[in-house]
Length: 135
Image (cartoon, rainbow, N blue to C red):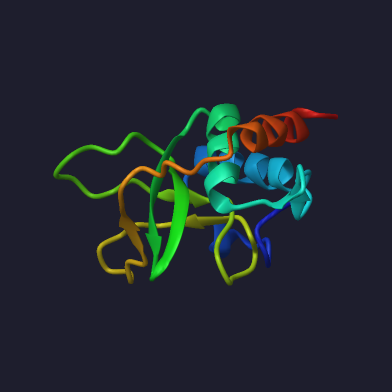
C-alpha cells in the first residue's frame, strides 16, 4: 500500500478515514499504469474516467490553474454548497501524482469547472481499467 508522504498522523488528520482509504486505493490503481498506453501518452482525462469506474466516484472536467484538467469528487457535488473534497489522480506539475485536496474556502482554489470533454479516448479508458484491475 502506498501512503501519504511523511506518513505522520498530523499529515493525515485533516481527512476522514474513508477518504484516506480511497486515496490509498487510488495510489495502488494508478501505480499500475505506465506513462503511455496503446501508443499514446496517458492523459488525466482518461485516467480520471477509468478511476471513476473502479472507485465509483464522479469526475469533473475543467481547469487546474490554466491547464485543461479532470479530477474526481469524493462525494456528489451539491448545487449552492461548498464543493466536496477532491481526489486528483494525475496532478499536473506536482508530486505526489495522486493527491487529496481539501476545498475549504480558506485555501487557494486552483480547480475550476468547465465544459464536459468530447475528445475522450474510450479504448484507452477501457485499457486503463483493465490495467488498474489486473493482479
